[in-house]
Each structure stands twice: as C-alpha cells, then as structure tokens.
Image (cartoon, rainbow, N blue to C red; front, side):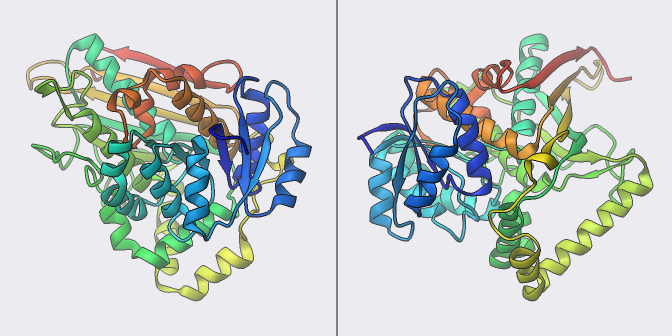
Length: 421
C-alpha cells in the first residue's frame, strides 16, 4: 500500500464491511485512493475483484496481523482516514486501532455502539488525539447518526429561528423494517458479558461521556413522560436509547465548550434534556415489546450459556440479512425539539424527519463513507476542534448535505411549529 492512502476500510470482508466497500466503489471520487484491509489477503483480493467500480478508482488490499499493535500502528501511519468496522470493538482490535490513530494523527470513523468501551477510550485517548490532531468520529452508523444529526439540526434551527437554547429533544423511531447482523448480536452479547447491565447504563447516562460537567442536569423534560409500564402513546424507550443518549450527551458537551472566553454560540443549552423512543401500532404492542426486551436483556446478562448460543449458533459473526431480504427495508425517525422559553412564553417547537428508504446496515456503509470523505474535505466543526474523540454531530451541516444528495438517498426535513398544541 502506498504511503498515506486516503481511506482504509478495516474489516472489509465482514458483513458491514462488504456493504461499505460496495458503496465506496460507487461513491468515492477517482482522485481518492483507498484500500481494503483485514486478516486474509486472499479474501481481500476476492472482494476487490467482485466490486463494481462505477466512479471510484480500483482499490488496493492490505493484509495485517490484527493482534499486533506494531502492525496496526504501521497501518495508521500509512492512512489519512481509517474506517474500522471490526466488532465487537471492546474484544477485538478496536482499542489498538484508536490508540494508533490517536498517537499518529490519523483520522478515524467507526460504527461502534459499546458505550462502556467508548468511555474507556475517551479516558485514555481523547487528550492524545487532541494533541496529535486526530479526529476520531465514533458511532457513525445507524446506531446514532439519525438521532445525533436530527438533534443537532433541531438545536441549530431553534438558535437561528428563535435565538434561544433548547430545553428538550425527543427522538422517535416511528417506522423501521430490517434485520440483525451477527456482528451486532455478538457486540451486544460481548458487551453484556464484559461490562454488565449496570456499567452499560452508567456509561450511557446523559452527559456521562461529555467533556465538560453541566451546570444543571434536567432530570425530566417538558413533554409527557412514560407511565409506570414504560409506555407513552404506543411508544417505549428505544432499543438504541443507551447508544443515542450517550452520543447525544457527548455532542452536547462538545458544543458546550468555551470558545474565546464565552459559551459557544452553537451550544445546545444548560437545561437540555434528551430521550429516545420507538413507536408501535398500539399501546399493547409497545408494552409487550418492552417487556420482552427487558426479559431478554436480563437473560443475556445472567446467562453465559445463552450468550454463547445466541452469538455463536443463532447469529454467528459475518452473517446478516441477504440482499433479497434487504429489499424494502427502511427507517423513519421523527424528532421533536422544544425551545427553552420563559414560563410565560409559548413553548416553541421544531420537528425533524430523518428518512432512509433502504436497509439500516446499508445506511451504515453510506454514512461511514460520507463521514470519511468529509474528514478528507475539511470545513466542519470537527476540523475547528482540531482533534479528539468526537461524534457524528461534530461533522455538522456538511454531513447532512452529503447524506441528502441523490446518491446516498437520505431525506431530512426541518420545520418550525410556533407553539405546542
């Protein structure tokens, strides 16, 4: 591989990696050099030969020992951006890759959703990345991008339209059709087994991953909350709520940082409150799903045998929905944001629709690729920050612009509603 290849896709022959590689072969400009990286040179060469290069230059391949910190460091020195899709991140080479990128000033993107591991990475390598200038964008796939970007857009719209901070953001997954990959299930099982439910919940708490402590933490929002069964208007807490809350909380903290002696003009607000839910056809369906999910999580937490059965037998690594199964898959998020207005003023509201008429895993490949290209291009808040462990929202409105082009196929609509009904 030539020195300083623009983009290296690490883990290219896995399920998500192949989807990402397929999109890169269509979407990367011919001027961008790229490589597929992983353990097996034979598998990488086979994949490279199968790709349909519609716009991109043909990729190279780079095989390395993923158990060798030296080999991973050499890879980081040879790349401008590494896109890492090897999971579970906490038990694979994830820590070594972030360490190498942070130390060598190499930009990085992943689709991790392992909040306790991410908290460890922030503690160990955030300051290292700041010093080297490495922009490390974490959780840049379906697990957090719709919620994180929708929140960012709603907050900035309230700032520009009403000149006010934001009091509350509620992200709702209103409609989704999709399946599970073995990698996602393996990550969940490894995460529960390694950290336990309490550590996961603690790392996902609001502002826990934020770089600055909040002056005030709002324990609840102004919108009606769930009842004692966790249900509100046929919706329950999202299965991705822990990921989304952790990432949005870090975005809040990054934008809350001090710039030129005063609070950043794009900050979310000190009274900011965030929650994430998913909607069902009825309250009964929502309650049944919520109860089933709680029971499954508890069983996985307390049974190593069940975790092994699920991750090794039912959903082995490298598997996922087939191309035929992915046909017709989609998702639709609706975000409601409330401005932080005085008690006697109308509660102004902004709504954001984030829609993708495709499979969630395909979206992850699209999102990772567009984020990597944006890191090469520059001109985002992440580049203004200069380095550190950052979130998708730090790629700002340019990221939204890239995702909503005809190729990626995302639709984002932002609208203002003057007051709550």
